[in-house]
Amino acid sequence: MNQQAFDAGKAAYRKGDVLGAIEALEQAKQPGEVSGAVDHLLGNCLMKLGRFSEAASAYGDALQDSSYGNAGALACNRGRALLAAGKPQEAIASLTMATKDASYPTPYKVQVALGNAYLKVGNPRDAGVAFRNAAIDEANPDPSSALRSLGSCFVQMGRPVDAVEAYRTALDFSTPQANQNAIYADLGMAYVAANRMPEAVDAFTHATADGTYMLSSEASVAFDAAKRASSAISGGSPSETDAFLAAAGYGTGSYDPLDPLGESGEFMPSPEDTGFFSVTEKELVEQDRRNRKVRRKHNHTGRKIFIFLLLLALILGGLCGYGYYSGYGWPTQEAVVSKLFTTKAEGGDISDLLDATVTNEAKTQISSVLPSSSTGVKVSGVDRSMTETTVFCTATLSAGGEQSYEVHLLRDGISWKVASVSAVYPSQGGVAPSLDAATPELTEGEAGEEATTEAPAETEAEAQSEPTEGEGEATQESEGAWEEEGTVAE
Image 1 (tube, one colour):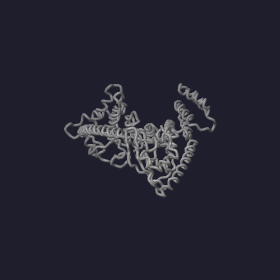
Image 2 (cartoon, rainbow, N blue to C red):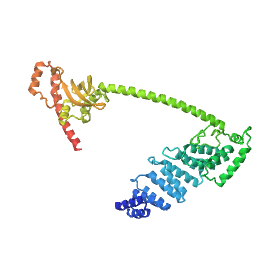
Image 3 (spheres, rainbow, N blue to C red):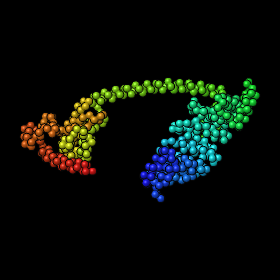
């Protein structure tokens, strides 16, 4: 790709020089070269010029670049271009592909375009499904527009009562600043189709109240007819609206027009289902009263739940603080020590278990003290404090016998890290030699003399096992040094 030409195309596009941008972008690719970034921007330029077929082709070329990504946006743009070019069937295929990109951040745009494409081919049912999906998309900043289109689909399907509820829901979602006159006019037409003349008069009156909206000729005729029919209705006898709806089977329940399943089990409710909406004014008032009562109950319950959760959080926070102050953590000191011995016995790297203050020399000393092979470790005691802990444990050696250790740990957040390890021998009266580099180590002669004067008599098997174990530890130390070097080399 010619990066200089591409940058020039982007700069021209930002300045509004669409023709200059196209000229530069056409020079940014070699013949046969694939570049999603170039073709995407080129498609946008062609759309601005109304060259929809060429734009669709550019977006299609961009989709060939799998490394570019943005499949949802490209397929959506291509579908819009095809729809504008008068190719709704091809647009439906491209827009359907766009709906399968789960990473596309604004799927409602695809659904709106898909609904319009289905309307172009005379399929109001699938168009209604698409508009419904656009309306319930949380990313949609204007669900009322999609709901208005959904109402139009219901009208085309001969389901005016469902259209009424769609338009009423659209009014609920429209902001006070938005022009609601057009929605009220559509609502009036739906009321007329449903033979609900008084409501139709009210809706048309709302649409024309401020004098800024002019009814279409069809809507004006419907308004006049609704006024004549409404004045002829007797207030004391059942209205024609109620009789019409009762004959149609409505009025026995309440359903959501946006529920894609309903009791019919279909993706959109079937017109044969009875009780799809509550339609009489009395039922609407009663339903609104019940809804307010339920909302008050839910609000009260919500406050109780919030207070309970707040108290629970305070209690848990107090327990966690007490545990931290008392020297507890996760993983526990016992678990860290057990993992230390197990990792050493398996020939693994113990670096992750050591505190950040442990030097390389101290790490080597810790590795040499730990048994090169053991079958398990048993913790006999833990001396806890908030910032440091000493664990007393005994390891069972693979060669036979046991060895006692003191493991010193330091606090690391809520967990613990090993700072030092000391072997404890009976000859030391339970006091472990320090592993600090500044402390002189016992010479071989001193160790032998001390063992001769203070240590109890050993069995022949024990005496034979110690050199063998020492040899294993020396071997493990050299192996450990090689493993660390290999890790650094990697």
